[in-house]
Length: 626
Ligand SMILES: Nc1nc2c(ncn2[C@@H]2O[C@H](COP(=O)(O)OP(=O)(O)OP(=O)(O)O)[C@@H](O)[C@H]2O)c(=O)[nH]1
Image (cartoon, rainbow, N blue to C red; front, side, top):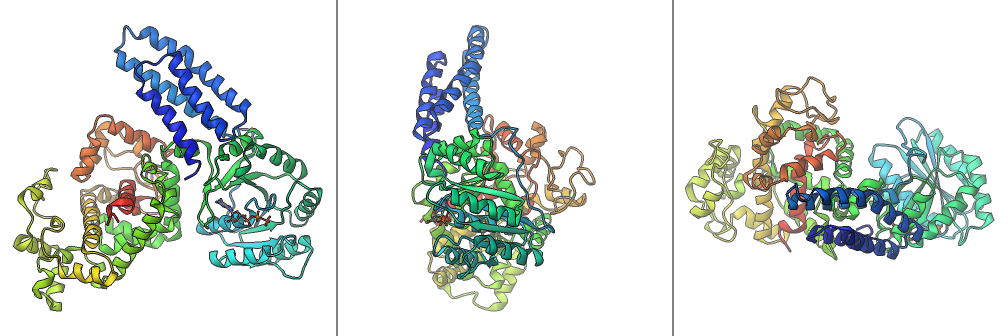
C-alpha cells in the first residue's frame, strides 16, 4: 500500500482526537504535533509542515472557541463531536492541499481515440522510466486505445532489451534498434512508423543519466524538437523525498514538461516528501508508481490519494476501474445486465465477476479503495489472497459446463457422495432444469438444523421463505458428490468448494431480489436504463426513484432517507441489519456522495458496489480462509 506508514501514523493521530474526552487548544496542539512529526519523517519540507500546522490552527481555533462557548447550551457530547469533526476536516483538507499542485497547474492530459498523440518520458537513470512506459501503455490499452512504445534510450546497454521484454509481456507493439546510436534518429523513425500505422498513443522512452547533466538535457531537447510530443512526462523516483523539488525545477528549466509521475511509492518512507515537493512546484502529478508490476500504476488525484492513505477509501476510483473493465468487454456487461434484470446469477457469472476483479489489478489496490477495507490488508495478505484466487480458479475449472451454467442448486442435491445414487445423467439434468428440483431436494433431505433455517427465514416479509434453498451448515453432513468431485479435481477441500458455492448463493439471492418485474433492475429495464451506454437521464426514472448518474444507474447520493430505506429492503437481511445501525444510512449517502454524481454508473453489471465489496471480502478471508 502507498505510504502505508505515513497513513498509519496520521490515522492514529486523528483517532487520538476521536478518543479524547475534551477537545481544546491543548488537544489540537497534541494532534498537530503527531501529524507534523509523521510528515517530517516522510521527508516533507519543514516549511510546508509549518504552513500546514499554522493553517489548521488558524482555521480551527476560532471555531473551537465558538463551540466551547455554546457548550453550556448544547448537549456536551454533541459539541464535543462537532469539535472533533472540525479538527478532522481541517487536517484532512490541509493534507490534501499539501499534495495539490493548485488551480494554476496545467490541466491533465487525456489521450483520445482516433488521433495520434506522442508522449515523451524523461527522467534520471533508474527513476523507473522504462517500467513506467509499459505501465502507462497498459493503462491506455485497457481504455481501448491503440498504443505503441519507442525505445530511444541508446545510452544504457540493455535498455532496449528491457523495453522489449516488458512490451512483449504487456502485448504492446514496440520499436527500437541494437545498432543505431542516435536517439533522435530512433525516436523519429519509431514515431513516424507508428504514426503511419495510426496508433492513438506513442510513448517514447528516453535515456537517463546519473545526475542532471547538460548532455541529458541537450538530448532531451533534440528528441523533443524531432518528435514534437503532445506531452512530456517527467518520471521521478519517490525515494528522493523533498529533493524532488530541485529535480523537477531543473527539468522544468531544461524542457517544458507537462506532468510528473512519481514512482516507487510502495516501499519508500520519503514518498510524502516527494509528492508535496512536486505539488509545491505547481506541476500536476498524473500517476504514481506503486510497485514493479504492470498494473502498479495509479491515477493521482489529491483528495482520493489522501483518503486512501488514511484508510478511508476511494469509491470514485473504484467506480472508474469498474467502468474501465466494463468498457473492455461491453458485450459481457450487456449480457450480465439482462440476466440481472431477470434475477438470474449463475455459477459462471460468479466466475466471470471474479475474473473481472482479478483483471483490475492487485487486490491490495482495490481494497484500499473501499472505505475500511484497506485495514484488512497487511503484511503478506496480498500473496495469500492471490493464492486463494488461484484455488478458486481451480475450483471453477473443475466444474462441468452444466454446473457452471446452473444456479448452483445441483451442488445442493441431497444425494451424498458416498451413496452412489443420482449418478444418472437424467437425474442431474432434472435437478438443474428448474429451481423446483432444488426446492424438492431441500424439502427431501437437507439436514438443516431448525435454528439455522430460522436464521434465514422470511424476515423481509416477501413470502418467499421456502423458495430459496439454503446450504447446509458446513461439515454437518456428507458432502454432495459433485462438491466432492470438484474438490478432488481442483486439489482443494470440500469446505473451500462449499464456501465458494455459499458465496455464489448469496449473490444469486441478491440478484433474485433485485431482478424481476418489481425489483430495482426490472424497474430500470422497463425504462430502458441500467445498460452500459444507456444515456443519463434518458426516459426518466420510475416514480420516486432518484435521478440517474452518467452510467444510467440511480445516483445514490441524491436518495432521500425514504428512498434509501426502500433500497435497503431489496438487500438480504444481513446487509440490511448492518445498514440499520445508527448513522449507517448517512454514511452510505456520504460515501456515494464522493462519487461525484456518477452514482453507481458502470457498476451495474458487476452486481453493484456492495456485491463487489463482499466479493473482495470473500477473497481476502471469506472463501476458504486459508
Ligand atoms: N517498488 C517499485 N519499483 C519500481 C517502480 N517503478 C520502477 N521500479 C523499479 O525500479 C528499477 C529501475 O526501473 P527502470 O524502469 O529500469 O528505470 P529507468 O528510469 O528506465 O532507468 P534508465 O533506463 O537507466 O534510465 C527497476 O528495478 C524497476 O522494477 C515502482 O513504482 N515501485
